[in-house]
Every structure is written in structure tokens, then in C-alpha cells.
Length: 342
Image 1 (tube, rainbow, N blue to C red):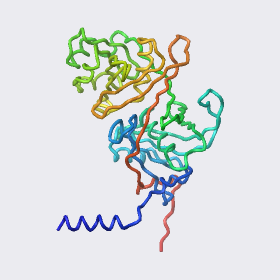
Image 2 (image 1 turned 180 degrees about the horizontal axis):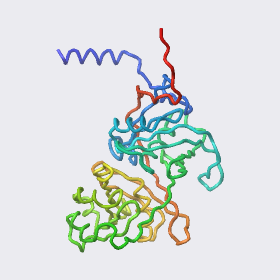
Image 3 (image 1 turned 90 degrees about the horizontal axis):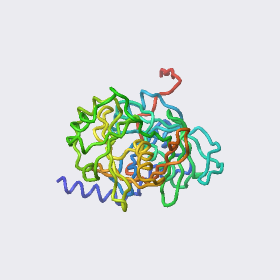
Image 4 (image 1 turned 30 degrees about the horizontal axis):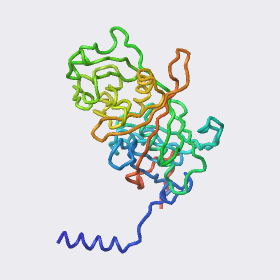
């Protein structure tokens, strides 16, 4: 009975004209919002991958105006992905073009939420948000997007073959202060490795630890309970790559913020890129994150601060949309509406 009923359902579906969500027909941001103007479009995007069901998934919610933070947090919790990006248009302005010349670019407000908290910076959800805009049929008027965020202005540029370039502030690792954070022995114990196989490089928002080779990074099974007690957002573990496929590899563990292991962590590469640039003597590098889903990035460092450290990091990658639909629970109105009695 079930098979017969399922077959008839498929037959009816084949005879029916295919439904294309309005966002797929969009030519401007305003038309990306679904037919019901108060029900925003919601996408799932796999970032830092060229194929579906790899890389790091993020949800992207396309709004036409600011939304209540409590509502955004509830939507993110319901998506249960590591990050959900919310954005709405704010206009157009001059931004630096691909060759350093001023160019017109669309501007948006962008905020990121994990299932439990709002965060200041997220690389893969920024890539997902830019991909959602750049991949809409009809394209953008400009290959540049500027996002206003809690970490300042971020610029996304569309490169060739669907590659998106993101610009972030560099966050090079700093030497650990005495008495702050775990000792080298405590790190080795949490990683289940001999002390002489572990190099504690330093810390930014995350603790950066270098291992002897990529195999050690791939095989790692850290004590996440111990890691969660350290005074950092997360733990970055890294090693040199093979050179042909990657200059360096890494994994990211963030149990303190509810992420046991992140598939691909764009923001962690704001720390990894300046570190490996100094080690390898290269400004542009290929990177792989060796999580179960895996991910690929190209990173570049540039700009000089007073201390001579790299000031900016450019992260490049691809993304794939896996789901597009309509969020049926719209954000609450900012102005209370008095109900009318019939």
C-alpha cells in the first residue's frame, strides 16, 4: 500500500509544473524576500567546498529590515547549525575594488548566531551570506559586497569561477603570559600526546598548537572536557601540509562555545595565516581543515602594522547552496500593532 501510494505521489509530482522559490528568480535583494513580505527566505549553504554535503554548513536568513535579537537567536537555535547568518540591506557606498581602486558596492548589516549565543566574527557564515547574494539569478550590480558587523566592516569580492574572497583583520598568535592558560604538559595531556610532540605557539581568541605532521592532526582525539576549561574560545591544532595539496592543515575544537569540532573555521585562519606565513616565508597559501567533512581555503596575508605583523587576511573559497525555502515564523514587528476586533 505504501509503495503504491508513494508511486502515485511521484507521478503527480512529475506532472506538476516545478515550483521555483522566489529567491531563485530574484534580481535584487528586495525580491529575495519571499512572497509574503514578512516571511524571510532561509538558505542552507555549505562553505569552503565545491561539492554539496562537505565543508561547513551555515544557515542564511535574508531580511529586509533589522530583526529582534531574541528572534534571531531562536531561529539559530532551531537550525541547530554551528552558525546562522542574518543580513539586511543598508544601501550602497564606495569600497576598495579588486585592484585597489574605489568601486561601488552594496552594503548590508550582518550578524551571526550559534545555537546559543551571538558571536563577533564567523568566516564560513560570511562566505555563505556572500554566496547567497552572488549566486542569485540575475547577479549583483557590483562584484563587491560590504558587511557591517560587530567586528567592523568586512568586504566580500566575487572572483572567477564562483570563488569568493573575504577580507578580515589578522589575529596573529601572541606569546602566552605566565600563569595564563594551560601549561605545555597540560596541553599534551589533553591531546593524548607526548610533551615533546607538542608546540604551544601562542594564543589570540584561540590557543594555537603545532604538531609534527598532518597525520598527527588527522588522528587527534582530544579531551574536550579539558579543552573547555581553558580560557579561550577554542583550540586550533595545526601542522605543515604536503605542499602539493596544502601548505598547512588544521582542526578546530570549540567545546567552550558549544562546538565540539568545527568542520571548517574561517576565523581561525586569521590566526593560522600570519603564523604559517612567518614559518614558510609565503604570503599566499593553500589550507585544508581535516575534519570529517573537510574543507579547502586559500589564504593571503598583507598590510603592515607598526610591529611588522600582517594586518589583514584574505580568505578565498567556494560554497554550495543545499536548501532554499521560506521561514514561516516572521520576526516580530518593531512597532506594536493593536489588534482589531471583528
